[in-house]
Length: 504
Image 1 (cartoon, rainbow, N blue to C red):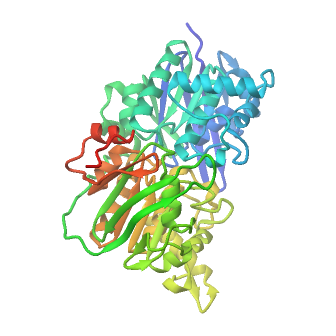
Image 2: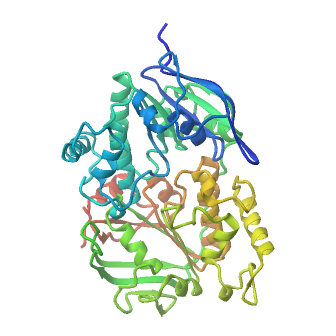
Image 3: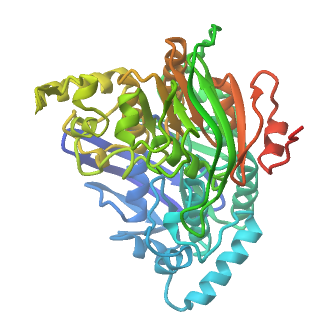
């Protein structure tokens, strides 16, 4: 009998008001690709952090390669041969890609040698990245590549991947799967967390299902359907989206000839961007991360106010030079791709985070005559939590204490609850389970049906095809012509992602 690569017995971890893991048992064999499936807040990420040594369990035992292991920190985990790619990236913004990777390795290699190995791995696995770029200049998808390459450079015996494809394009996912299958064939064990059920069925040969912190089932995903996996995970199948047709209203967002030079040497120049979003429609923007999405969103949200006069208008108002607060007063609400740091202040409570996008001018319930009404803020946060199924220890829970999917649901819910006339959202369902993704997408369609103009920027083509009325693709800082979603194909959009569209 071959000893399991990893064996967990009775793993339990509790926090005030919530039991994250309750007597969890898990066995992973050498060369096995093992999925851990569960809805947001089921305890998946907590369990992975326990294995990696980031969190100490309250009870239970862990064995690695047949030997009892008490891993006190990630350094000891890496010493055993365990590497992890986190859902929320562990990167220092102010230093380069190579320096970030070097910090996680033993110091037998020089920084120059690490840079060379990054370039080699990036070319080998199709995860192109410049080792000399500062991390703060990267998009979310590019940061994901850095995390994956850093893990691969340690030559792990057990590789833990927490939502590794959430911001990768379909082409990049295919390349990553080739890499993972090769690693498994070489004997590396893989623990794989994803809410994309088709990925789990295509990649994994074992699956453990968690619900409410407890193991509720073990199966072979290849023998299951998306529907049966969904029932195992959330107890039901996600609701079908309903697409209603209606007449378009006025133009709520118009971008004419927007050209902006990059703000740093690693950015992307925006070139003659033309875009219009009308009341009663959802417009999508697809593209590979790092092709100008960040720069465009900064210009639209007001974080970058360098746009030429009259190049960005909202409902007839020139907003090119207006800051985010002034644009909110005109009805714009915005969900950025970075949840922690931009979408929410990690140390503030959920109720306090409502104040980021609420003010007296929009008659927010939490304000009265210039004073904060803390009770009303709590009530409002609780209502959003109930409407969007956010699992947290009440409105007073710190944003950083939530799982990634639950925080995403709260941030999206916070902005939808403000009843925007123009709603811009980046990566709306990044890291959320299938049930929550269906709910968020349904809420976006409901906004559209209520007369809101919606712009969705996403690297998930399936999502864009599901919710959008028409699409653009951004590549090299340029925006493609628009195409009705009903007439678009995945192959066409994939070609356009390389900038190969006709301007005729």
